[in-house]
Image 1 (cartoon, rainbow, N blue to C red):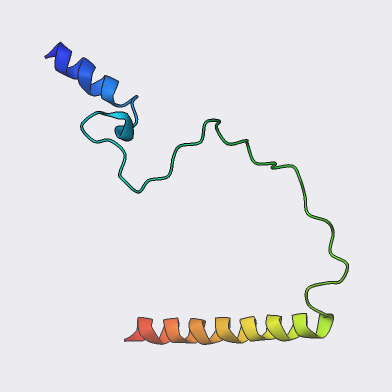
Image 2 (image 1 turned 30 degrees about the vertical axis):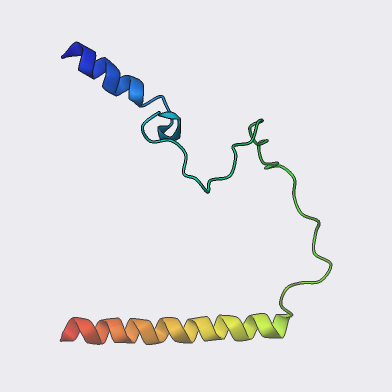
Length: 82
């Protein structure tokens, strides 16, 4: 019983593709020889020169979102009453 447990736990540390019974599919690309580098998490993109939305567009979008929220709130209240 202990031998089966050891084999079972040992199998967790081996990638399935490396097992002789499973193997790698025929069309699979070759594995890279070196592991990939860590992503540069502290590299920030350059600051934007102009804002994404001008103030008038931003007000319109905010008003549209408020209208949608009010419609959904009304629909939710109507559904609760039924």
